Length: 340
Image (cartoon, rainbow, N blue to C red; front, side):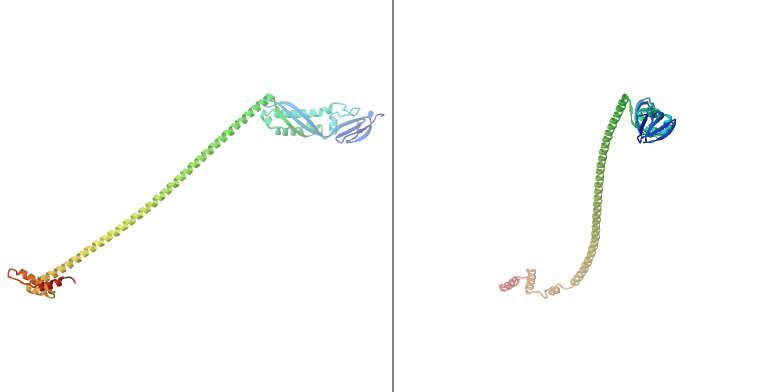
């Protein structure tokens, strides 16, 4: 009514009120009345804005990829931005008078695309697909250090790469190659497992053989020990037999010496007896036989004397004509000879 309007600005918007080419009011979250015919309002959003982007680029090996991401920014110096771009509100107060506010996100996207192209042209396809973190870091640093963005009073809060995708044909080729690589690795894993099993089996066989060898060595050592012990026993037995033989030889030698000594003693004793007998015989040879007979008859029994008398009678039988012996005498002699 009468050209007077009430303006209420959100806390995330920065408003500048121009009147006769001069700023009469500025700030965020203001509310005031103004006279529309003589007032120009500049409204700059200062809240953070997420700007998605998607564009296609070519890698160092001439492979086309699609880069999809998002830029987060805010207007740090709205007065500087209002001097470079037109953020003036239309007389209705609802829309902008120009399309500059819609160009700001595109400028950021264009700058991000330039930085992305510069990074991807030095990377092969596999490097680009596998180094998205490095790409994000370089793009963020490039945007934050860009003079064109800083001159607009815009601060880049962050940048993220949501996806880097090759063309469908290249993707299928990479998938096939990756699949073959996975299958090859699976086969290698199977072969490695089989080799490990074979190696383990070989180790087990070697351990078994080593155990058998150790057992055989122990048996050989036990047998050698038994043989050594038996040899020692045999040697001891041999030494005992030699000692017994030596003792027997010594005993036989002593027996021999004893026999020789006994024989010598017996010989000397016999010689002594023979000498005595010879001396007696020599003495008796010079004695009268009658005398000797008389001496022999001394101490004889009556029967012996009668027998001796009969012997002499028999010796002189040719001289005796008739001999009478009484029965009493024979009876007496026989009675004497019977054992009592």
